[in-house]
Image (tube, rainbow, N blue to C red; front, side, top):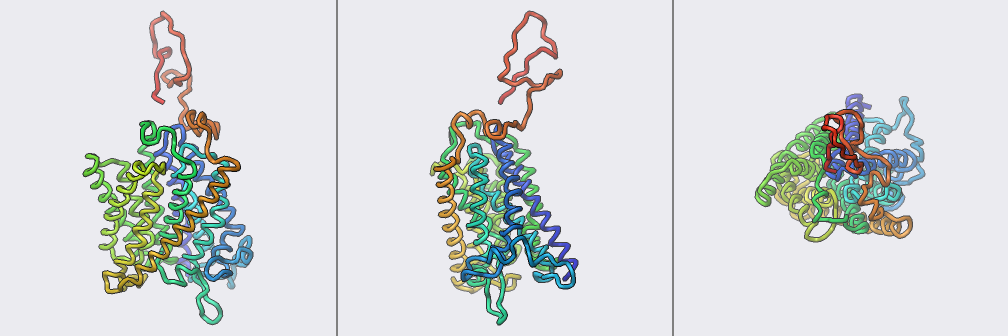
Length: 453
């Protein structure tokens, strides 16, 4: 065991956990004021639900001994984390860190993957239906897919026994472009189709983000945590972590520029929402590639991802698919761009040691990347659609039209993010309350203040 490596991975795990509240701010600011709490609650619900399932059987299903030809770990082998709790001299290790530390690091990946999906169903989903979907999806989709990508094990004779994508086929995904972003993006597309469009989609100006400072704050917290996401995946305080770290700076920085250039040319304005979205698009794209590209190629990838994702987001209006907060346009498309770009620009001298097309590697690596991306996308979409369809037909996934008009915060959670009902002098007065008009002169205490809901 190396104490420096252990400390770095523990810190990285905490950084990645912070990403989910950061995502709650990012998504919450993009919704209407009467839906922000529901949006944030779905992220916090993912923390509670997935955190418990991971400890009970999720870790075992993901990193237990393979029981299906690279498809799934044994969910009973480490049930309740049995076998990884020894803290003495015989503590099991993953590389140079205790396995129990690795358990925690991978747990927060599972949590944020589930939370990412929620952006596609903003303003209109029942909280109970979402939690039911999340419990089933993480069990039958995320845990197996994470095993495909992240599980690297060998038998007593040194034969590989891990996941079929990462260890079996040799596709490169350093920190989760397939297992996290393509996986979540495909599921988000499925749910957007199941729930249908919000009332007034593409026409009602009230669907604009209600709090852009929240969006910027959320993007900043996501970027901060993403250094743990990517550099922490080196599982050590070493040069590989440094390599991933600098690429996690370069790509999203370039992606901001790429997104803003598209906005300026297309719309005439570079927006704060575009800057925040561009940063996230670059972070998504560099996630699988941060150990495979040079920093200069990371800048190229960032510019490409920012521009492509900005264009992809606009397609939802042409296609009529209400992906509320652009999960498909940013995470699915960005994950595909980053995963496939490895096949072109992977540097054989990088830590990942892949040889892309631009370095004379031919189409072999690109083919592996395409198979990995396609397999995860199709599997996640099909299973998520089936789960969502069943839930919609049984318990119902979408709130009623009247509840949607009133606001999902009040109708589902009996709460409001902003209280305008105070009685003190100078307080705001809710629009629904009518005051009688008297002949007395208006004062600061009696003047009605109208609030744009």
